[in-house]
Amino acid sequence: MSNALVIIPTYNEIENISKMISKVFSLPNDFHLLIIDDNSPDGTAQIVKDEQINYTGKLHILEREGKLGLGTAYITGFKWAIEKGYEYIFEMDADFSHNPEDLIILYEACKNGADLAIGSRYKSGVNVVNWPMGRVLMSYFASKYVKLITGMPINDTTAGFKCYRKKVLESINLDKIRFKGYAFQIEMKFTAWKMKFNIIEIPIVFTDRKEGKSKMSGGIFNEAFWGVIKLKFGSLFKKYEPKAA
Image (cartoon, rainbow, N blue to C red; front, side, top):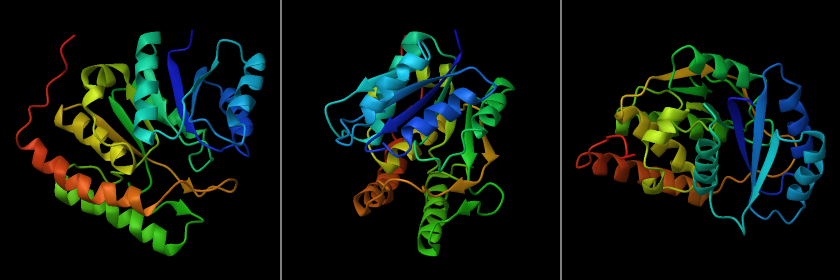
C-alpha cells in the first residue's frame, strides 16, 4: 500500500479532473488519490467513479451533499487518511494551478525531516503565472499581513499546496478548527507552528487555472482578514498542545 495520499476537493471541475487523475498516477511515486466532491452539478463525481475502474484501490472518492466549505472538505479527508494509515497527506487543487510534479518535492521534504512542507509562491520572489496584477498584489500582501499579525515565519501563509506528516494531523484537534474558507489554510499553519512542528517552504510556480471557474470570492477574503485577528487574539489565551489520544 502507498504511504502517500493526495486530497483534492472538487466542485465543478469536469474540465480538469480526468487529466489531473491521469497526471498524478503517471508520477514515479506511488501516490494514492482522494477526491472529495461537494455534489458538483456538472458531473465531476461521476467522472471520478468511472476512472476508478482504471485505478482500483488507488483512486477514492467521498461525496458530500453540497458546498460545505474548503476547510470541512480537507478535515473530512484528513480524518479518512489517518484512519487508513497514510503517513504523508497532501492538499492540492484540481485545476493545475499546483503542478502535480511538485508533489514529489513536497514528499521528499517531509521524508527528510519536515513535519509540514508548503509549496510556496513567495519563498523566492513572486512565482505566479497568468494572474492579473491586482490579484497578485492582493494575494502577496495578504500573506504579508498574516505574517505581520500572527508572527509566523512563513512567506506564503495562505498557500493551499502542502504535505503533512500524519503526526501533525493526529496532534491537531481537527474538530476545533474554526474556519471553512481561505482562512482555513492560515489556521492550520498557525496551529502547526504554535505546536512547534518543523515547517519548511519549498518554492513553486503557481499557474492560474486554464479550465473551469475560480471559486475565490470577496467573502472568502473577508473571513481571512478578520479571521487572522481573531486567531491571534484567541491564541493569547490558548495552550497549543497535542490532543488527547
